[in-house]
Each structure stands twice: as structure tokens, then as C-alpha cells.
Image 1 (spheres, rainbow, N blue to C red):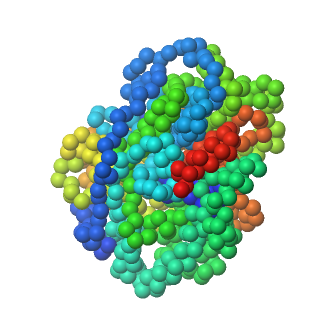
Image 2: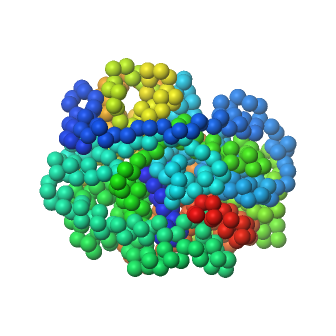
Image 3: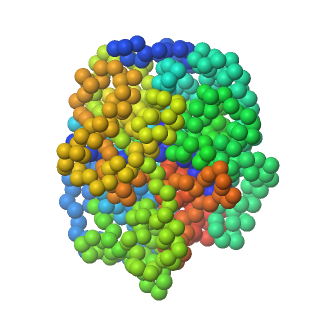
Length: 597
């Protein structure tokens, strides 16, 4: 996703976040798009920045039992049996972060993944020369140092460089018109003046000033410093001055952002709508369900002078490969095509996993599940967990799902300055969380031509967490009903892409449409959901913390079904949390010297 739930276990556990997606189903100034003509904004082009970081891309990772082409023979499950310190179920971003960090700390780690490609909901795959991304498309804070992004900090901890292209623009196709907007300066004021009115300009200026103390408070405490035992007094000590300074803002940043806007009389319809868009992109929830801390960080990162966005060379798959390299170079193992059937429990402690086919991996220290809570609980023996915890976990509110449109197209004649990102909203009155109302489009090959054959572009359009799960339940993927619904529900994606490339349907060479059933099938996601939500509301009195612990000794959980939900920084924060449940505080303090100097 463009940006979604930044991780929050405390005020500073934040970063520009990208909601993971997944599908590989087979089957400036006013720039108004004219019919039959691709949008080619020219306003403020002189300030546009695209530069590749001066660092060679590391070689691709290799994986045990299979490569991303799925051509290698699969080892038998029994031959995978072994003993280790930690076994991680699932090679999503959260699982890889936890596994790689623990390997860095010196533990023996095995990550098992049912798919033949690592990355989970952020994996990438190739077809006909195109590289398709199932997940994130907009990033910040991954390659530049220092950073408050938990994933960026973790890559630094692993000594893994991530070459990126830096840029600062994206296109908006809103009811008011189509316009280019930028991060890193006040160009948005020009947009407001031309497309909206002077009142919107003044209210935006007011909001930016109000957000400055919230932004500072949001960065007060990194996830890498948090522990759940008394030693937290030691790991948190160095951040005490910042926390004390931020103390007056803590109640504000730990409350829904809608409350902040209401209390500060932010009333202009467009500004409210725009902030609803940003909240939904960050958290998958409206302003009433988004912590003000998340918006505070975003303001600091996007609207500070000379800010930029980042696109990893190689796409989101490059992040996955960097984490796999970090795991393997520190002695960890990644086993693909390795489906976990059961989590073993002995003497009220998780002790390992049983693979489909009979392989057994014994874990002396911990089992870490990167599967969702809804998919983890059925792996446990009955009675292993308190019924109250099971019920609370199973009752976690499900995020809605996504529709995806993946395209490989002929780029002949398209403008050279085509934007990578496009936000499309059909009707403000329906609300940004309404189904089929907002679409995000990423044309990744604009910034990284290696993702498509010469003269081609690769496109990913998706509805960000607003596709109803119930609409697809019980459908047979081979049925005519499913095919009709798939065609019907993908039309809004085509309309959004046509805003950027009006004749795109005539250019298509490869087309794939993903649905909630696609996610359920390929990503083994419960009902095709993208994680949990609903922890924050206007009536919230207490805020959960980001924690990997469970009532069962030896079992930790990481990933987007736990607070604060979906997002690369969010699940990376879980990786930090899980690791620091298992290593002594002095090792953590040594790591803090490196990642939070």
C-alpha cells in the first residue's frame, strides 16, 4: 500500500508504513487530464527529485529447497527434521525480521515457509519478464540513516544496505481534479489555492504548526528499546529525556486523530477529507480509528524541508532478500515449501513444529508464529491456550481485503515523466473507507526499469483494505459466479489506471486480477484478510502495546493480526519485540548503541 499502519508500542514506534498486499491469481499546478491523453503534469518539475543511492545492489538471495522460480526439487519433510533454538512459522516481513535479528544475536534460527517464495504478503514474482509486487509500493526511512522506521533500523542492525531511488512526487485524481503533489516542501499550499480555496490554505498552515509537537513526541521512543521485563528500565533509560519532553503530548498522540482535529477545530471539508485519506493509507482505518502518533510521524517525515520518498531497487522483493541475507549470513536457515501442521507443546511450553509430511523441528528456546492469530490457533493442541485468550484473539476485528490488478503493458509513446504513484478517489461523500471508492496505483518500472522488459511498464492497482470479505465467502474459484464477480469488482481498478494511462486496455500484454480468495489461497490468509483492526476508537480509554508474548511459554506471535495491525514498520516492530523476549538486556543495549546512537 502507499502507506499504512505505522507501528506503535509506545509514542515513538512509528515509521512511514506500507500495507502489505498480495495476489498472483492466474486468470504543483493544476493538471487536469484530458480525455484520451495520459496525465503528464508539468508544474514544478524543476523541484522533482529522482536519484539512485550510490550503492551497488547486493546479489539475490538463494533459498533452501526452492528458488523464486520454484524449479528446484523439494526436499522431503522428514529430511528437514532437526533441532534448533528458535523456529519461525512464516517468512513474511515480521517473521524474517524476528528470525534475522535473533540470528544476529547468535541464536540458531530456522524459518519455515509454506510458499516457494519468501516475503508473505510482500512477496514478488516474475512472469514474462515482468516483476510483479504483491505488496508495498511506497516507502520511507529504509535506506537513509538515521531513521525511526523499525524496518530501516533492523536492516541497519543486520548491516544490510538497501539501494533506493529517491523521489518526491505523486499524482492525485480526486473529485476536485487531477494534480501533482510533493513531499518535502509547501507545494501542497499551491495545490490548495488553485483547486480548493484560501480557507483551505490557512487551515493547512494551522494544522502543520499544530502537528510539530506531536511529530516530535511520536519519535520519542523506538521499538528497538522496548522490553516486557524489569530490564526495560535499563534499555529505556537513554530515552528518558526525550520522553519527559514529550510528556505533555503523550495523551494527544495516543488518542484517535479525529479527536485531535475536533479539539483544534480543523473543519474545512477538503482538509478533513485529505486527512481521512492519509489516515486510511497509514492504518487502514478512518481518523477515528488512527492514532494521532501515526499522523504525527507522517507529517514530520513527509512535510519537512527536502523530504523524499524511497523506492528500493528491485522493488519490495529487495527488502525481503535483504532480510533473508541477514538471516543466512548469521547462520540462520530458510526452508521453503515447508507447511507447518502442528505446534508441539510439552509441559505447558511450545517446543517445536511438525511439518506436513512428518518432519519435526524441535526448538529449545521458542516458536515464533508469523501466521495470523486466526491461522495460528488451529495449529495448537486443544487446551494449550487459556480459552479467554483464544476467544479474544479469534474475535479480533478483521481488516477488509483488497482487489488487485496486475498488468504488464507496452509503454510505447507514454510520457517520460509518468508518475509512479496515483491516488484515485471517486466520491468524498461516500467516505474513503467505502468499498470501491479509493484506489492506489503503482507503476514501479517508472523508477526501476529492471522490473519490466525494455519498452514496457509493470502496474499494480489495488483497493486498499476496503473489499468486503463476506462478498467472496463460499465461492468456488472455478465457478462462473466467481469469474463474473472478479470482472465486476475489478472495474474500479481499471478506471483508476485509465486516469494515468487512458488507453491502457489496448496496451495490456499480461493481466492478473487478485481477490480475497487469492490472498486466502496463495498467502494462506484467514478469509483473505490483511490482519487485524479495531483497537483504536473514539471511546478508547487504553491503548494496547506492541508485544509478541502469549500466555503459552515459548510461543511468540508477530505480524499484522496483532496491534497495531498491518504495515511494514508495524510488523518489523514485532520482530524487535519477539527478539527482545529472548535475549538478555545487555545484548539489546549493545544493539541500541548501533541503531539508536
